[in-house]
Amino acid sequence: MAAYARDLIRQLDDQRIDQVVVCGLSMGGYIAFELLRQVPTRVHAAVLCNTKASADTPEAKRGRDAMAAKAEREGARGIAAELVPKLLAPATRELQPAVVREVAEMIVRQPVAGIVGALRALRERPDSTPLLARIRIPVLVIAGEDDQITPAAGMQEMAGAIPNAEFLVIPDAGHLAPLEQPRAFNAAITDVLTKRG
Image 1 (cartoon, rainbow, N blue to C red):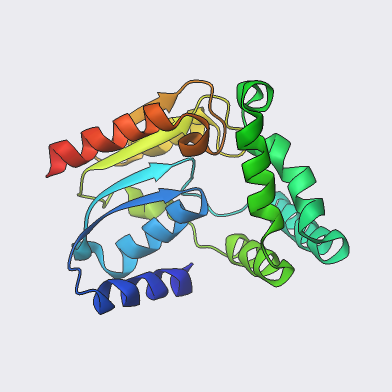
Image 2: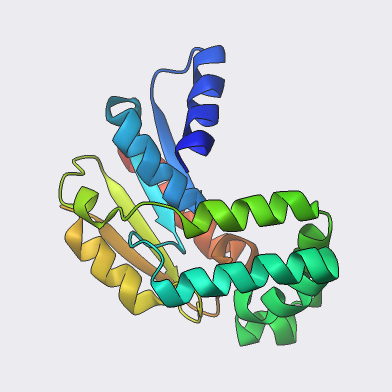
């Protein structure tokens, strides 16, 4: 996660951007936490979507290892077949076949080496829970009502540990709330940007 954050910081430097409102979805939330560790004064506000602060448990690490082995054995299609039902809410799977196809195709386009590398980075990410109480910027935490990977209850607990954070649950959304319910998600983001200038 530190390397991903350093890459992002380099891009900000190259474009001479001093401060940002960062929106991190899932793994992007872990990168947002890393930005808050490395360059806290450059983060003006944050949206943490479908993510969590805690590190992987031993059981979760075994799951990452199994997924990496599956990727090496079966390729990106095997990963897509396993992940898509977990990523999307039942309502999305039933009523939005185009989103289901888009997510599956997005996974299938990824090189196996990239999937395995990301799984290893996720497995080894630090616990960001101690950071939460020190965050002093405006934060919006967005959960999907039907998220199996980062359940809304855990995200609400995370939001409660961040001083003055706001918490929002998006109905009929799973782990990919911005794709599943773009209108509700975009309205929440617009509200944050309007309030924060």
